[in-house]
Length: 213
Ligand code: URA
Image (cartoon, rainbow, N blue to C red; front, top):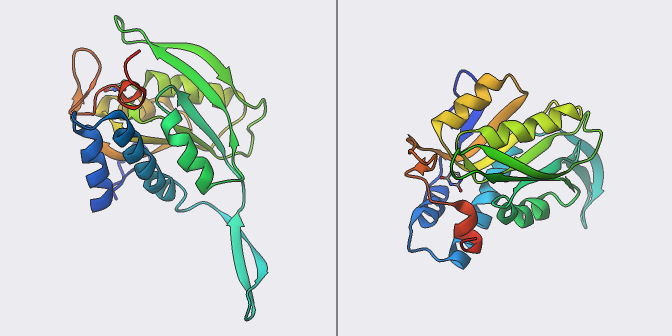
């Protein structure tokens, strides 16, 4: 686990995470296998993201004795960034069944590489809510910064980005945004190419899951 000085950034360091990421990077992995690897990797990323989540204790009765159990203190809001974040929703919400869900839709202008927001569906008041943004790819950081700004406008001050692959450019954009955010990722790759794709990356995470548009 690494922590960069600018922002709380955790990179999964586990042989099983690395094997799943390898499967996702491989261009010969078909759409169903890619989605399956993404689901499994999401499980590991969510575990890591909630490692230090506050809990409350309560009594639970086993068949043998009364003992102390725990549950999450504050059920979070999960926010997949459409469309690529959709493949992370099922696993994240099944791990945290009490979570609520919001949605942000952002396309990418293929000429300018700028994010083009097209929809948002979020609760009005997010004060006190931990928020987990699900997006497999943190490239330039434009979409993520836009998403976090929407959350902060609604009072969020505890936002975690859960990504599979991040580019250093995107990490830097988040760190220098001054927004209350931390990052959990499976890899920080080399950088962006001239088309703002992550290198070596895994290609277009939406296309890899759902086929080309
Ligand atoms: N979005 C993707 O899906 N892949 C990239 O490499 C960059 C942005």
